[in-house]
Length: 99
Image (cartoon, rainbow, N blue to C red; front, side):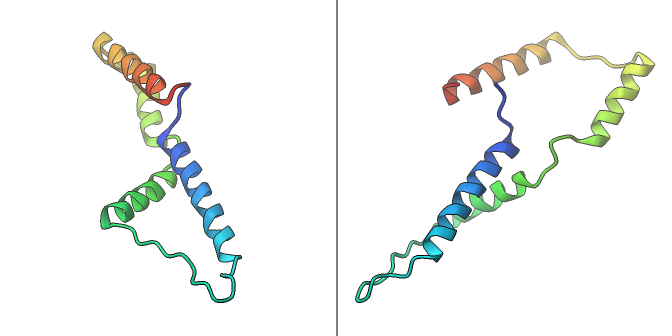
């Protein structure tokens, strides 16, 4: 199973949006103060990065066109080491995510 960074970004953004909407609709009980949270600059950077990643396209059309051209011309080459590295990275990610 492959989970792209865009999918992770969309899931996180959706989750945070649901939390924000739910908390925005609940006024604090009379006499009680509402909860507040502050986030570190690092957390805000991560949030921004995740939002940017979520907006990236799934397919890089320019790269796909370039690869198609190379394949058509017979000039496309990829090393077995690169393939092995990708397979191992995918296996580590799958193990890490427990899927």
